[in-house]
Length: 201
Image 1 (cartoon, helix red, strand yellow):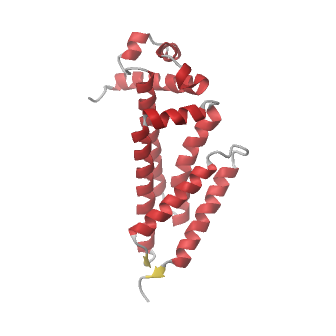
Image 2 (cartoon, helix red, strand yellow):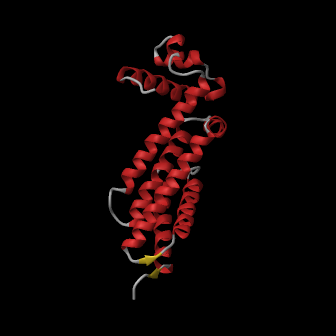
Image 3 (cartoon, helix red, strand yellow):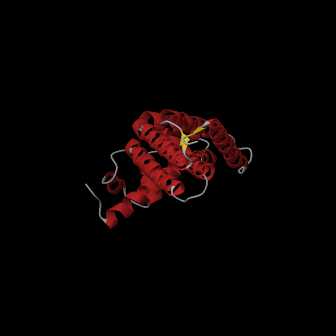
């Protein structure tokens, strides 16, 4: 059932409050009363929009993933070289993960609860991101008249995602993971260009 503008605004307020609570005290210690207090609403009012704190977490994860995918599609359609497009798509995931890690000492717990409470949403997000990367790679190969099957493009997309996951935990320097992602993607694309066979003589 779709929400009215006013109802959506209230739900967003609740989810913003839930995020503030989760990053401050973790999901286990957070209560619906905490969320209601931060949202400036009564507990019964909060229960009109979420069933419990786990439901709030799931809705919050859905909002984050949906917003991230919208940004990833914008990044893919923004033009530029293949390396630039892949870098911008992957940066969306990097920023989402590092924001949580920087915002909260409970990031490990929250990520763990994502796998428990919203595992299907997390898998769908990664799969959608991988599909977008694969499509972007295949389209670029076609434009350059290079022979590259979807299977190989998918493998490259999965390698690029693995690279991004490896960089997420590096919080030593705010700019370093972003720089290393850009360099890693450039190397992947350079290797792709060198290995691909021209479709025409």
